[in-house]
Amino acid sequence: MHIGFLGLGNMGGPMARNLLKAGHRLTVFDPFPQAVAALVEGGASPADSPAAVASAKVEVIITMLPTADHVKQVYRGKDGLLANVDQGVLLIDSSTIDPLTAREVARFALAQGNPMLDAPVSGGTGGAAAGTLTFMVGGPVGVYDQALPVLSVMGQNIVHCGAAGNGQVAKIANNMLLGISMVGVAEAMALGVALGMDAKVLAGVINSSTGRCWSSMINNPFPGVMENTPASRGYSGGFGTDLMLKDLGLATEAARQARQPVVLGAVAQQLYQTFSLQGKGSLDFSAIIKMFRGES
Ligand code: NAD
Image (cartoon, rainbow, N blue to C red; front, side):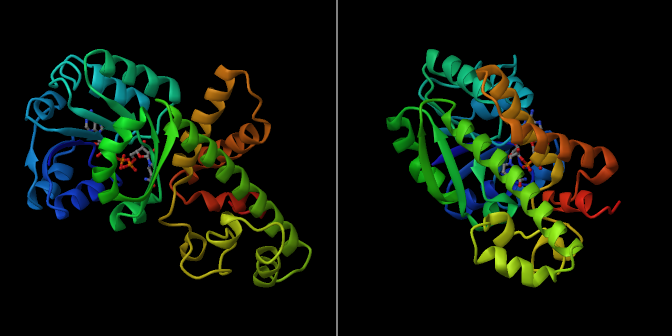
């Protein structure tokens, strides 16, 4: 299949490479020339604008962009995808953005004859490289079925979440819970250690008791409790604090629009925001435990 791919960063780069490895033909665009060069080396064709990707007779276009503003510009800009793409070409946006923008772009796409899905992912850069991402997909079920063979190359779990925008809803609800649970685990671990407990013993108790969750079992924030976690390598790698802050911002803003209280989500957002202001935005989000341990 001939696929257009825009946004070849930490996530999009490895996702596009997996499509190439699976034998698909790729036409790619990213304003960052080195990102394009890496894919061209692997066999992709370069394009010099979103319009050029749309005009390259592709059958599917995938975007993996930083924010909703980028998505609006790439899809709806003058040299964007929608103004230049043939009718019937399937559009898949895997960026994490707010559900309202996702729904609006999908409505414009559909109105001109292009089926569109929002398909944000979880699984991080490791999952992108390994082709084991989870895709949370919003859009008509027939379009989801059409996209499955392509999404399956990049992911292991492809979940249909409902109508347009619902992929983003699932993504921001999950990540809000993740941000909150990490703060909870950090607070509990710091309390236990401050009261004299050994961190490994405490983590063992939590992980065989009712407090356990992903943040305590897989990505425990206390240094040295588990091997191969960001906490045990100076909080490098993993999921950056600023990316968590972005997702919490999307969740709290979507909640405001729906007049839905997200009390703990808002507190977690403020904590990560304070931490980011202290210059820690690039550390894995589990580093939030530093705020509870009085570390700068
Ligand atoms: P990134 O900043 O590494 O990559 C984004 C890429 O988009 C960059 O290469 C940038 O040059 C490119 N870009 C910017 N403007 C563009 C345009 N107009 N046209 C084409 N390309 C353009 O970001 P990332 O980590 O790959 O994240 C991408 C998306 O995936 C974000 O929405 C993020 O929230 C989400 N996400 C990231 C992770 C993660 O662990 N990094 C995990 C899940 C979801």
